[in-house]
Length: 379
Ligand code: NAD
Image (cartoon, rainbow, N blue to C red; front, side, top):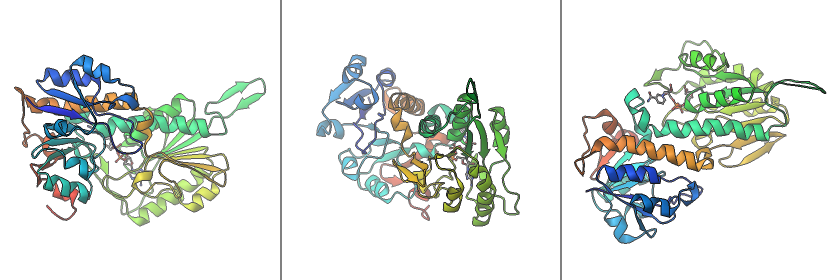
């Protein structure tokens, strides 16, 4: 009978938890035992007693026996090397493990003979949607980015007709129309803004327009950036220069810019330069969701709001953590969807023929299976 362990997340600022009382109940129904560290759900609004009521065993944080007996360790953020060293050989770690070129993780997995599934590497196919943690969390980030921008902005979002005259709607420019960007479009539209969207994948034009926003056609150049598996590939410097030139006039008239453009495993494309910020009006707001990947916008700082000549630059790297109850509920359900097929007859079986498992299983019993990701160059 596999034993799951749900820890208190140790990364500073992390408020989410990898299982809720509801998902604990699910895992118990699959024939698992579940241990939950006391306080694991407190910052996301789930009480210890609620876990216990569903049948979880509560243990003290860091309880040595609890850790060494765990078969499956469910986390949100990657645990430290010292934490991973407390797990038994062959234990499976599942979470958002920041796998790209992560040498520390690679070394810990090898040293501890651990298995690990990195949710970032789940293929973006229809069958994987219910397990897609990147999407569930990006959706929240996109929603919250617009709320933060509207709270920081010195204007209304909607057009209003008042006795004192008509107020024009805010102009919002959204860079990147993936999961976060499309949710940002929908949220800004619900608040009544006029929304413009830039993305380099032509396929998103229809989605953007169906949400009532206007699509900014990407620059027409010979070296168009390619797309693979639904993701954008890295654009050339020449393409990005042409794109910045095109966006500069749009941003000069914008009240808000929401930056969500990313290329998996790469530094985020720099779409707003110092010069472009110089042209934005004081009072305008930029929220940069790509700030932890190098930022789409110059001068943004993770987790901080920078006042740059009156333009507020918000580093929105941790927005799912500001909506921890729903972020945890959705994340925890993603984990159930991913693991349910592997938990058959009271046993854990990882089927490498299954493309979902093969995609995200970065290591098995210390053998590195996705060396192409963990350590670029190695296969
Ligand atoms: P992401 O976070 O990697 O990137 C966000 C957006 O930035 C993408 O739309 C990308 O095209 C865009 N971008 C990259 N470079 C840019 C640039 N220079 N200028 C402007 N935009 C730029 O993407 P994501 O949100 O994870 O989604 C990627 C794709 O996967 C989307 O098409 C999404 O619909 C699809 N998807 C599929 C599934 C599924 O079928 N299971 C689930 C989720 C997402």
